[in-house]
Length: 189
Image 1 (cartoon, rainbow, N blue to C red):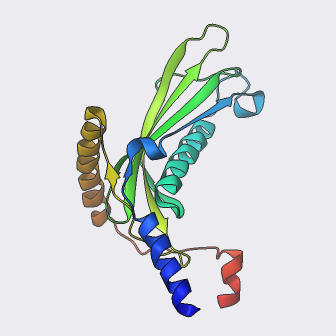
Image 2: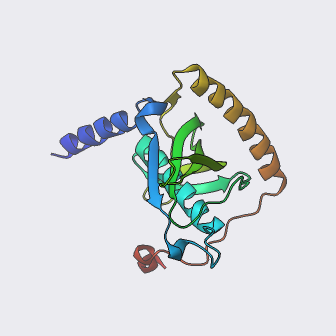
């Protein structure tokens, strides 16, 4: 019986480590902006847009790894145009690059005016996610297969951004400290 469980676990690990194409994990979220998403002037809060970016990125990362994922970093975010109450906001996310335990996901945010149908690019960001095991340790993740010329270009550009991020993070590396333990982990203390 124990050997059957081991075989099943090995098979599941093999399935999880299969390479995937960018198209297999791409996601597009859409959300209508309501008054609770905006300031009194009707402009959508930047923090709400950042939340959508993180959610879209996390979905792509989880689809790629079939694991718990965490946001390790968000590259610079410039708000190019505002979104307003009544706009339909899209978060279009896709995998750009995969390393051993981390991956870069690009997210483009657009707003659509539902009265005119006009789309406006609000901004873009690159996020790095790490997949974790049940003990919150980084795990090796499947590789990505860029198929189109654009996907290959984005892969190469992401490699360069990763090198810059690693160089910068090594210069200011501190030991991470957790201030709150997850409830299910409390009994261990």
